[in-house]
Length: 122
Image (spheres, rainbow, N blue to C red):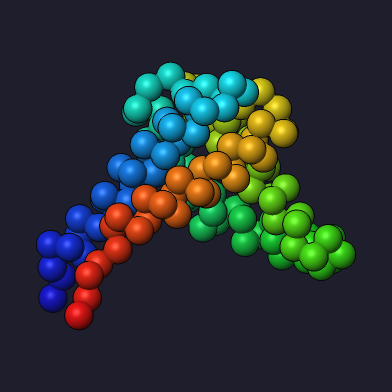
């Protein structure tokens, strides 16, 4: 039986991801978000890209990922940010290095906000 928490938790995480996108763009001069709705769309597309595109890129780049001891995964994250930049009109990143910084800072914010939405199971 689905409880209210099971329904609201993913919605709260998505809304907080939009806030994280806004905060990250505010901190980085090389990233620009027009408004919260664009940030929410960016959060949705990043989530979808992480589910669909990222596993394909990870599989295709296994040799270089192994050689770089996993650091190439940061490049894949930046590529996903640049891909989302291409599809969302109200969002722009000024280049690869800004996309890399955006992905790192966004990860930190999403991690912090993820702690807020964890269920308190006892």
